[in-house]
Length: 242
Image 1 (cartoon, rainbow, N blue to C red):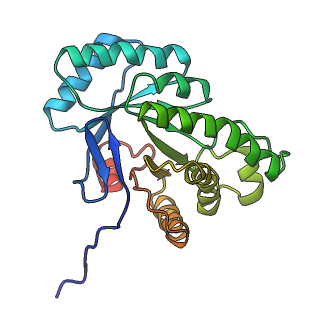
Image 2 (cartoon, rainbow, N blue to C red):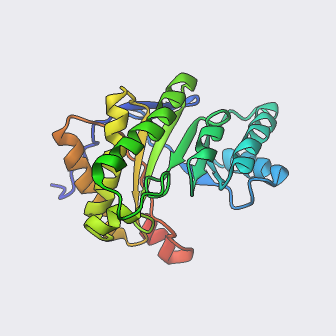
Image 3 (spheres, rainbow, N blue to C red):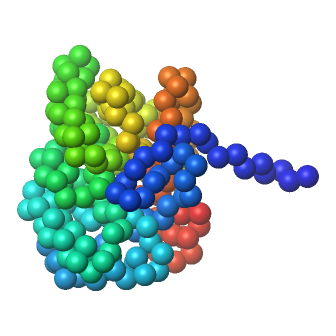
C-alpha cells in the first residue's frame, strides 16, 4: 500500500486567456522572460521559443508604466506570429503599472507588500479602507476586461505595517494575502490565483498550508500558483522547485 495518497485540492476554475487554471483543468506550466520588457524582439523570441517547448503561460516584468504599455506591442507581435499563449504581467513596486497592464495581458500579478506602501504607523482600519478603495478599483477593472489576477505574496517584501504586527513570518504572509482576498470576495471576483513565495522552501510550504486552512474555513477555493523565490540554478534550483 502506498504511503502517499494524492488527492487534488478542489478549487475554482480561473480562465487565463484561452487557458484554464485550477478546478479539474490540467496543471499549467509557466515560464518568464529574463530580458528587459522594453526589448520587444527578444521578448517575442523568448515567448515563441518557450511555447514551442510546451510552456503554457508566459510572464513579463513590468516595473513601470512604460514597460506595462510595451506589453501591448509584445502581445500584438505574438498574435501576428500565431501565438495565443496567455501572457502575464509581473508588477513589482506600485499600483499604476498594474492598471496599465490590464489593457494588454491575460493576468496581472500584484504584490500586496508594495501594491500600496503602507507604513508601520498606519492603523488597520485606515489601511483596509485604502486597500478596499485602490485594489477594489483594480479588481473592478479586471472584471470589466475579463482579466485574471494573481495575488503574489513574497516573504521578502511584506509591507511595513504587516512586518510591524507579525514579523517576517508565514502568518504575516497569510494576513497580507487575506486582506486582498477579502476585497475580491466582497466584489464576487473568482478569477484570482494566489502564490505564497519564499526562498526558503519550508517557509513557503508553511505559508501555503496555513493560507489553505484559512480559506477552507471561509469556503473560499482560490487556486494556487506554486513557486520558490530565487530557487537558483543547477541541482539546488531543481530540488527547491520540486
